[in-house]
Image 1 (cartoon, rainbow, N blue to C red):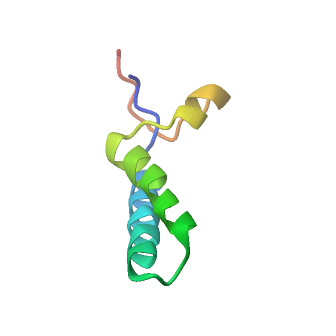
Image 2 (image 1 turned 45 degrees about the vertical axis):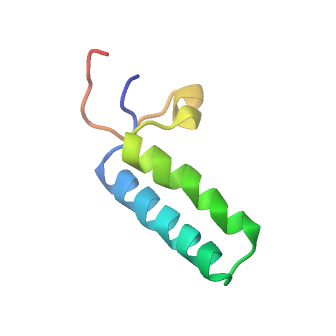
Length: 65
């Protein structure tokens, strides 16, 4: 699995994911807040399947994997 999520992108995904999950857990937003799991996971694993489909990358590191 090739890394394709860079530094600032990663931080934003993690923050937004945690915020959405927190809002859903407190009942502030509806069930859709649990979709925050997706940006949280992509930020933690530094891999976004959609970026791969589109041929994009925000990661400056070019690994050999």
